[in-house]
Structures are given as C-alpha cells and as structure tokens.
Image (cartoon, rainbow, N blue to C red):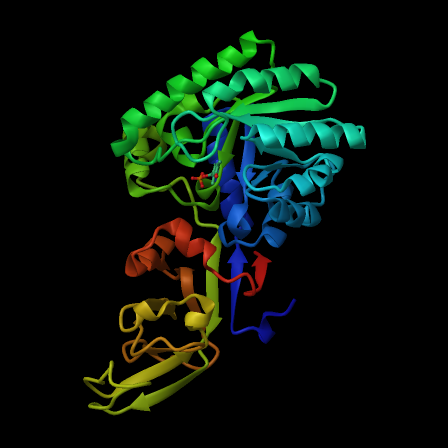
Length: 390
Ligand SMILES: *Cc1c(COP(=O)(O)O)cnc(C)c1O
C-alpha cells in the first residue's frame, strides 16, 4: 500500500525485532517457549503486520487477551504450526469456536471449565486449556477452594480436555516495591502446581512469566515466557533495566541497550511559513513568536494520538534536528518551530517516534511528556495509521 495516501505512517523494523527475540531467547534458554504477547493490537504495532513478521523470525506461539484478537491473529498468521493462546476474555458461546480452531484458553472459573467440557463433547475434540491459578494478584484465577472440584471435573472428562498449561500472572514484577508480594506468589504457585501434579493432573507447560518477571525473577521463567513489552524493544520500566544491567554487567559493557525499538512513526512536512516576531501562531494565543520564525506544519494531531497536552511541549525530528511544537496541537495538524533547522521544506520526513540522524524520540520521552507509561502510549497509536515492515 502506498503511504502517499496517508498523512503519517508506522514502520516496523524486522531487524530490531530479530535482535530483541534473539537476546530474549538466549536469556531464557532454547528449551523455553517464546510466546509473543500481541494483545492491544500488538501493543499498537498492528496485529495484521506484526504476526507474519514475527512468524518470519521463527515465532510460533502468540498470546492474546480476547477471542476477537485471537481471530485477528489467526487471520494474519501464515504458518500451519502457529499456536494462539487466549489469556483473558472469551465468552462461553465462543469456546466451541476456539476448540475447533485449536486455540487454547485460560480457565479461571469452574463455569468456563464446565462449559469447555460440554463444548468439547459436542464437537468431539478436546479443549486445550490452561489452568490459571489465583496466587495473590486477586484479579482472575481459580481459588484454592475450587481446586478439588476442578480436579474432579478434569479427571471425569480427561478425554475432552488437554491441559496445555498451568499458569499465573504476577502483580507488578517490574517494581521492587512489590518484592514481597511477588515472592509470595512464586511460593504459592510452586505449592499449588505441585498439588495439581500430585493429583495426577499433568500440565504440558508451567508458565508464569511476563517480561518483567522473566527479567527480574529468573525462577519464574519455567516452560513458556509470555513476552509482551520487551519483544517490542522496551524495558518494562527503568528500574528493571538498571536491575538487569547490574546483574549482568557483561551484557551491557558498552552501555548499549540490548533491546531496540521496533516501531517508528513518521510523517512529512506539509508546508512552511515565515512568521514575523510578535505574532501569535495557530488558534488563540498560546504561542507568540519571539523573533522572526519559520513555522512548519505537520499533518498529525490529537485525532492521531498526538495529545493536546503536547501543546508547546512536544518535539518532533526534522532533518535530524529537534523541532519543538509551537502552539496548540490541532485535530489533524501540528505547528513546529523550525527556525534553527536550515532548509526545511515541504515533503521533508518528520519523525514522531523513532530515529532520525543522531536523534531519537523515544516512546518513553513521548510518554514522559504525556506522563504515561510506554504501554499506554503504544496502544493508543490508532489502528488506522498504515503499518509497513522495513
Ligand atoms: C500482558 C500480559 C503479559 C505480558 O506482559 P509484558 O509486561 O508486556 O511482558 C503476560 N501475561 C499476561 C497474563 C498478560 O496479561
């Protein structure tokens, strides 16, 4: 598809993704399954483009939040042996659909377990399930007092159930402030999963780790790691990065981040204009020129996710230099001050997120400006902006 039609576009770097998964796979070891978490439209990267790219890089296991995302991922997938796992929402009415398509799903309620059995029976094919245990996050998960009944159901219906996994999720493994709580969850998981084993329930995989827990608590790695944010080239937070570098000084001798951002967001200069000193630029009076200035317009605005709170604060890159937003962020348009950047003209590339020359606008600097987390900024990048692999 031609980017000519679009005011801005997103590029996914396959080489950056390869670098990330090779680093992460080396770290977790080759016997551990790398599951690529692609909820939230692949953290804003776009499921439709991201899945086939990841498959080309050898990924065959994807984790989604919900059944609609599973369908999107299945449509985007081009590999027969790719597996999709639903970690969250699927209605009982969609369980049959998932079973027929070999999609596995988390079980955190007896109701869903019973319904999965019923549907598997009807279809004549086992449901592939993961027992999601409550270990202390207190969000979703089978409670201790439901374990016995779950075991009974599984024993009585072993023909209809394939136990792909036994799993849990940690309540904030990125922050040392949660250390005690995470330790307790790790202990609980060990105890509960062995209990299931003692009852003869053999899950194919034990899995608990997301990016932060895999990086901060290696004992959580087990048989599958569900990597979200890290595969896209972001540390879950600064603390996790610092922690990691301290623990593995060799990895980072040259102070070079082993992770590289996969996503860039780009546009073009739409037009330029000379504005004399002492004039207001754009709507209202938020920006007054302090000198004769060159103002460039960029066809990106709050309708594309470039927040109004970046008014007079945001930065974009043009010709390898930093250009500050001058005036209100409009619905479809930004005005930036390019007085100090020579020869800016219509059609010049503008980087909203990513590299240009020596400069980089990171999502985190973008998000610090917005006072958001990486996760939140990424998923808010609208799905209608076209994506391409570079
Ligand atoms: C989102 C999610 C992950 C991945 O989290 P990251 O911090 O992005 O690595 C893993 N497991 C579950 C259950 C999740 O919801």
